[in-house]
Amino acid sequence: MAVISITILISFKTGGMWKKTNTYIELPEVKFDSNCYFIVTQDNGDPFDYYFWSPFDELNQLQHDRLMAPIVSVTENDVDDNGVTDYATIEIKFKYPEEKFEVKSLHWMLFYKFTLNRRSIIQANGVIFDEIHRPTNLASYFVQSDLVFDQRKPLPSYGNYHFKNDLFSKYTDDIDENSTGTEFNYGSVSYQPYEIRKQAMLANYTLKMDRKVDFWEPKSAETTDYLKLSFEFHVLASELVYETDASELLKWVWIQILAIFVIVNCVFQQLTAVFIENGVFGTLVRHNKVDKLE
Image (tube, rainbow, N blue to C red; front, side):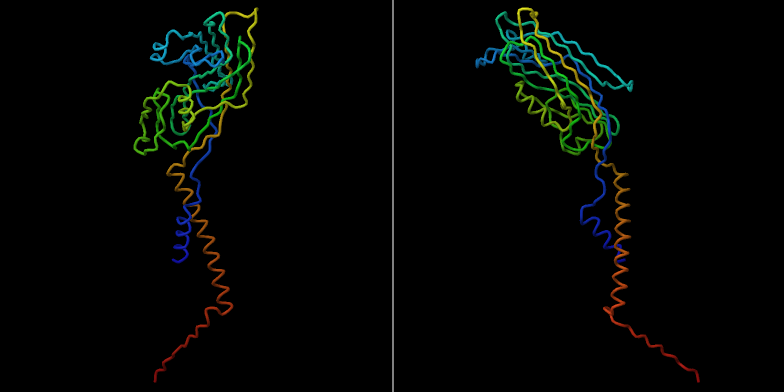
């Protein structure tokens, strides 16, 4: 009884040493659309000397005199025929807003949706962003990068989680709101690029660029009147960390308790034998009393 009590006490007093997370290799299903956010400036210090395009109708209508509409082409390839996109290419063309306008600064954002379905089903939106500053007028810009999954906390082990199309909400830690079938309320946020980036960085689950290479071509007399942007992304399988579900947790609890029980029981028996052998417990003398029948 003492051995069992010590075993349980060690197991739960230490908070448990069993596996609370599991790691699986999974390829996120990523879908790009034509939604993009671009801001070009001449880098001359004038805050009003810019042109842009955004996926927000309200912002576009408010500053319609500063719009530069893009031509967007998205190509997705499934190289290994597993039903999930491995390579995505986004080609974008802008007509220069003015003949003398020089694009020396470019801020870009590309919006996407991703799905995970190995354990729990998680659907969410995300944004990939970067910026470039060059001393001469840009004619074209090319980016090639791997995309890997990035997480700030373990994924839930089961359930169906759908993040609303409003990209800039925060994942809630409320257990009730994380139940199966719940849609998360993102709320509203500013259209400023800085605010969008900040909210995207706070997302618990997102994709990020890795091993990026980019180059640019300056505008010359031979180049066209279009600013050309090209993005090539290779979506990689990533090691995703999931929370351990109840059945797996019970398995590891049982294994740990059994292991601790065996160790404690062995140590307890060895110590008891040593104490008795060295007379620590003293010698108990037993007197047998025999009654004779007369």
